[in-house]
Image 1 (cartoon, rainbow, N blue to C red):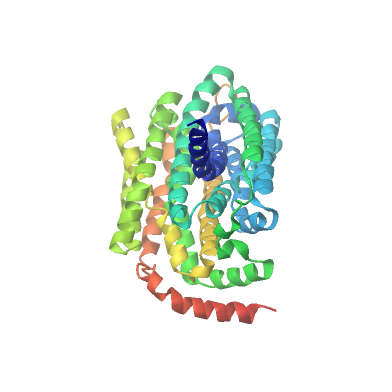
Image 2: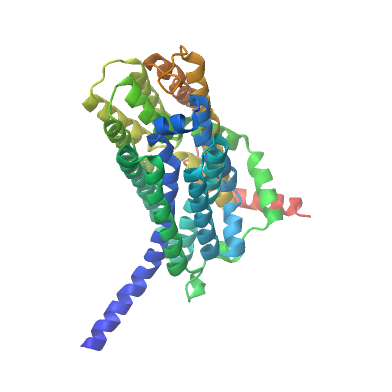
Length: 449
């Protein structure tokens, strides 16, 4: 009986062990989300501590994206070259190093360096999770992990804002971030102890994993992808449709709600978190609906239009109640749930054997929004302010200042809607991939030296 129970327990552990490894990758992705959204909860403390304007605050947050964005393309190759375990541990440690520099910084430039290093390390989180899933789990679990990781990461973003808001008020931002630093160090240890490169039955590895793309093949693939005009259109549209998250939700939403609606920090974070929840719920539903009707552009355009209208309500309709704001932000998040369709468009507008690189390029183009628009909103705030100063001799921003600066978000989404009419529908793209595969093989062969 004892031997039988031991065999049963061991069998259960073996079946759960791959999920345990993949969950470690998800924890790293959660840590990445924490690092990304944390400045939004510390805006007053950071502006006072470094004596910076809104423009500089936007730049400080954007330093993260300056490293994170361009790294989306080479991270897959780095994982292939050096193995998942070594890379994911090293990059998590790099993110922790960046956080430690940021905590100890006494000058704006040093804090910016810390944010840059955080983005460099965190850029490996999501791809590392998917890499672990592709190695340790059956192929029919890959999409599940991709959706689950996104949902878990966004939940971590909402919880991070709630946690940091309370802790910053109690102990200050540096002491609050020290707890995150300890958690990051513990995460590095967990990754080192649990994550392994491959299972013993290496036959489970798919062909793509056994024959990773080299530099010459990557260059040829990138040349083919970047010569596709639809990819540039998809990237720009995805970037503009992601502005409610990358600019408002990640950075300026909480300062806006506190200043314009005179909410407490906790109330502002509560409303902001509803956007995460709407996104988490609607993402799988809209994705399923898009697959069902075999249309990509229609749900993307309709959801973008609704998000733009609701943002205009938030920015230009005064006196909204707490409950009204909560509902509106939830629906905005639900509209943003259509955003992953951009990745499907990127994948389906390219040959299937380049799907991984195409998705990476799409993600890089989308994340450019954080690089450009986070500092831009700060610059517009500084340009529109009436030069009133607070007791710390820092600019005071009014409701009209915020409405003016944040207008770039609904305007950007509106431009994205107009551009979406030039997208080619790809609902039937899978049926044409076999023809594209042959063409791509010939192209890559001609490009090879």
